[in-house]
Length: 131
Length: 318
Image (cartoon, rainbow over all chains, first blue to last red; front, side, top):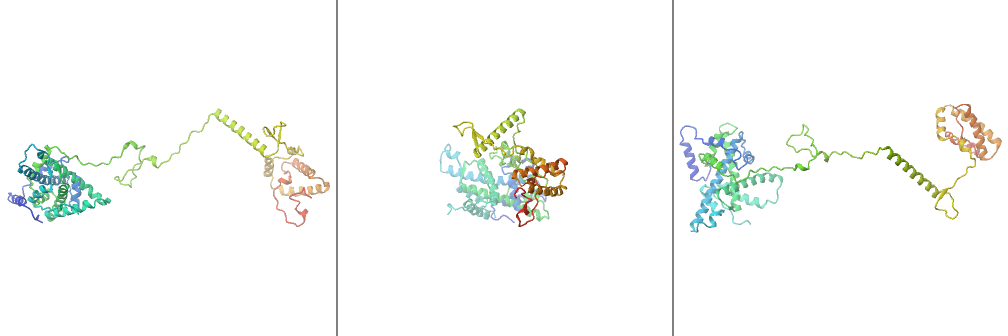
């Protein structure tokens, strides 16, 4: 059941969990539970609940659904931030001035996304054109 | 696993975008939620700082998001069942996230950070609002055998027909006028019809057609109408005594035959003679029916070859 092809990050997380004192892993998520309200999550409860139901996960507590949607949001936003870093690195590496429009307009392209995802262990290969 | 998911998602989304033209209701069910995820991904990218994005990358991220949620659900369910439970708990999810390589410690910080940030994505609430301006009247409530999530009944004016008609005019004066004018029109029309179809006389020598008068038909016996009883009287007399009718008509028939053969007179005279005994018979008592041969009840004649055998029906012919 282990996630195949995971990078360095996932190996560090279980290690930290295992090294925690006591049989229970340090669960810091309860701190996130009461604070996450329905209005903050971008993903509606219904949509998350729909996908969870398709997987066989019937949630008894709506806060669990919000927690999952929050985790998924963070997942995507982390990838987006990494892609932004790549985009900025490519922009400033060519030596263009910072006041240019390149600072304001960042376009997410597959060239930025692919290396960002590869750090997570996700290899994407999209065809450049569709036949 | 995530690797395979991403590549499979890439191919899947490619084929899906090609076949998007044919959407049946089953596909719409999935596409609606996928669209929501796309909006979410787009808002997250905007929050990160991107102005625009390639469609392929948005599709990739959407597919990843969907797979991620599904995977969390599947894995949490498996963990939960692994410990002989059916209801997933928080710890199941935490373990799932940990196993998937998610740093759970950063989650509260991320939640607080999103509190501070402006939520750029508007809450995706698609509520099809039926315009209330066009409703008229109260809709019928659901009968108990219909669940509440079914659509409501339509407006009552769509299936209930209440015929409307104007109140008839009941003003006495107006009605009287109407009756009078109708009567006058009817009389006029009828007389004109009779003038056009029957014989006419005219007052003026030269002008025949302008004021036609209905020609009077003089009766041969003017006092006949006074003698003959009207239809109404005949009916009343018949109703009063129907049982004695047969006997009396038989006797009166014999009397008539005798009187007719004796006189041998013209048609009118015989009819007059017939009237006299019948009238006398009627004066005897009210129960005696006036024996007008033309108004007698129909007796089917015995079919006799001889001519005078049929005299019961038309005694005036010899």
